[in-house]
Amino acid sequence: MQELGRLDDLPLAYRESLGAQNLVPLWPSLRSVLPPGTPARRTQPVMWSYEALRPLLMQAGELTPIEKAERRVLVLANPGHGLEKMQASAAIYLGMQLLLPGEWAPSHKHTPNAVRMIVEGEGAYTTVDGEKCPMSRGDLILTPTGLWHEHGHDGKEPVVWLDVLDLPLVYYTETSYAVEGKEQDVTATRLERNYARGGVVPSPVFSRGSARRYPMLRYPWADARAALLSLAESQPDVEAVQVAYVNPENGSDCQNILGFSALMLRPGETLNLPARSPAMVFHLIEGGAEVAIEANRFALSPADTCCAPGYTPVTLKNRSASEPAFVFVADESPLHKKLGVYEVRA
Ligand code: GTQ
Image 1: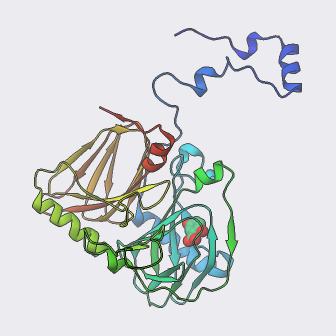
Image 2: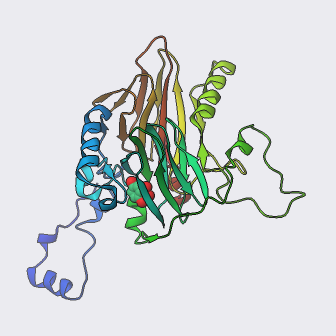
Image 3: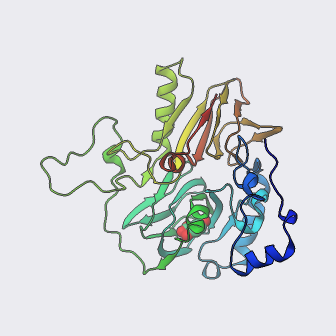
């Protein structure tokens, strides 16, 4: 490849004249903004151990009252981006949020999309757009862009969940903002049971009103887990036992920017994922798994989380020969597909 001219090849006076008019020569930077073959990346393979972070999260519960935090969250930050950027990858933000019994995280809405993957504890709920969504281990609750949401807790134990947001991307595009609201009335009944039977959905034909953009806000783990087990049983040859969290009205990704799925690793299974452009996040719900990314071997126990950069093959291994392992996966594929940059490399 042709070597290009460097900045210090240019006379100082010329560079100063360019700068004075807010002009920059492209050629000294051309190879860095358009690197050959594979993108430059900041996202590093990183793992966050739940056992290691949990005491610090509980300590935050003692140090900072909820009124002083609004959202009591420890952000899972990728050092490759700089911890202060609060990014797991280019588009993904991850945070572990703690709500103690009796606490309330007040209502707001914002432009970034969020989901919650419940990690531990019973009795908390998120009210989204007037719909009260109870939280149990493994449930996925959506709080899509622009919908009011607040968190409450009527139980007795600390409740922790993993927040996954597209905040880095929305912030980068200078479209990130929030609006504070007042406590929501619970006005909507929970609609998720309407979609619990695959293949039949509420029909709009004889009733007025159009389908909501986000018809399903809570995806119970019991249903996703049962779907994985029946998939594994009915299609023993299927390459990956995986279900996607989709809009049940039209089968599209459940949110606009990030994609979400659940994966079952059969006892003893090794799953080789090809290098794809989107970065990915793995959060272990149940069992034991090893995630191999380049030279890294992350041994995940329940509630551990790790991330993998894009354009990198990943190998997932069930560490048990007798029990299945269940993994929650978040990735940037809806974004890449919409942008037209999605790629799978053989
Ligand atoms: O629960 O609404 O981790 O607004 C970051 C921003 C959680 C939330 C986060 C948020 C929330």
